[in-house]
Length: 116
Image (tube, rainbow, N blue to C red):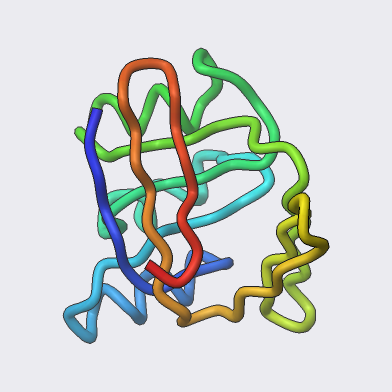
């Protein structure tokens, strides 16, 4: 359970840079791996588009006490243009790296809030 907000970070490098500037980010990846641990440690929250509650990202986030949402459908990470595209009932919403987002987790339910 928990809530966190911060700038959207789509890479470990961006997450580290935001944290170093005093703004712990929401770190978003398709899947987490061991190379992402330094970024996960300095992030306020974590979102993955793939995986489940027993995946590496979810387990690591729980150990570190970070709010985490895993396996979010309808989210496309475009690392080349540094944006997150979220499909919704009203069409697509584009969120740029650095825009403020929030992660809200209550029990087994999690929500990603855009423009929080």
